[in-house]
Amino acid sequence: MAKTRVCPWWICFTFDNALRRLLQNPKRTIAPYVKPGWTVLDVGPGMGYFTIPLAKLVGDSGKVIAADIQKQMLKGIYKRALKAGVQDRIELHLSMPESIGVTGPIDFCLAFWMVHEVNDRAHFLGEIFQILKPQGQLLLAEPKLHVAKINFNSTVEIAKQAGFSIVETPGIFFSYAVLLGKL
Image (cartoon, rainbow, N blue to C red):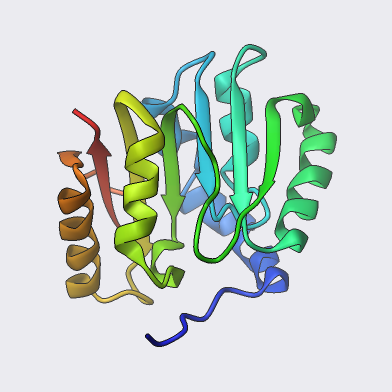
């Protein structure tokens, strides 16, 4: 099996900028799917573009698990969480390339612009399905210029084989996106 290239930690700084916030506002993107008190998994969070807004949305009684295979990404999230005052709501989790390693249960999972980096998508999506609570949801998005539509559709089919159902196909700028549910 070919090894998938993982986005280097230092390039993630380019993803967090004013233009992206204007076109792909993190709070607007995720707010319809997250409630206060929930446990949320942000898998492959980069430097925390969505992690910090997720932590604000889940509130004091909720928790966000930021799971990444790169320590530098998690260090960046911690610094940003401290600055935002939400560090107590975020659990940093160093995953292995072959497993997320989070036991759950979780209410919601965000996999944003990262599934194309996963070698075994069936295992990855099955692992998320297993830790989601009943009625839990996964918002999966991939970048249009980097991932072919046929590959995104293949990922959605793999998710269905894992047990997910399509809930909706939200419009997210510059992305293929699907909201999947454990129904």
